[in-house]
Image (tube, rainbow, N blue to C red):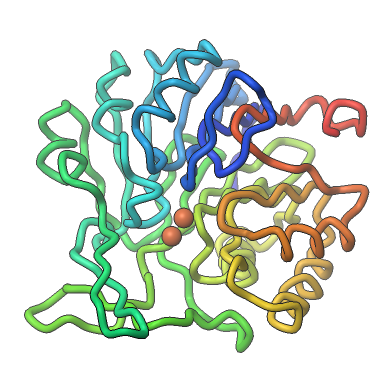
Length: 299
Ligand SMILES: [Fe+2]
Ligand SMILES: [Fe+2]
């Protein structure tokens, strides 16, 4: 796999914020600013949050320019990751590619214990037609998709581990009949930083973060996993459910682990204990620069 020279990560939306002037929300949006090997600058966004106003507020407060935004990857079709795709695509002077699995915009719901259906799909005004009307180009694929050399999506992630099953009664309307929703649209983004290895960005990692890393390995077998950033969806797990995930994470020996969003406090604490030197707490306004990886810069 090709590589990039530099990567700057800015979390634009997350559940938490430690900046007094920024807003938190139950949602995720991560900006990648990349310098390629030939010296060109690239701007790529992963997800577009849950609360449009809060995300746009943070972008303005952080003085982030999206005029050169060239691609938005939708990690999956949940409402907390897809609320401002139209608005952010419009901020670019370019024709933005919106990369998504074919299931991202499908109707989906969860059946609660009381038998109530709770819908949680991409919000109104942010769906296929709206995105196209905003001048963006939708790219639907289940396969890995190279955005620029050195940056690739994982595409659909095979479910291999026994300890990362998706709980709950989730349904998706793909054909005529609703079917069990295994959130097959879940995908991650890989950035290969020269001299370091793979930076892996997950949205919610509904596939399981270990399945995600296995997928990265199968796409780029020679790359070591350098950094893991994003949601790991362990929020509803107890300690015994989190342990095998943390143990498996250890086997990848990442140099940076930065969980956020739906990882949950219990899992975040356990990950911190397992990776005290590699751990970076993530939140709205967090920046991580691939060329400044000393402890002082990260804590
Ligand atoms: Fe999700
Ligand atoms: Fe989420």
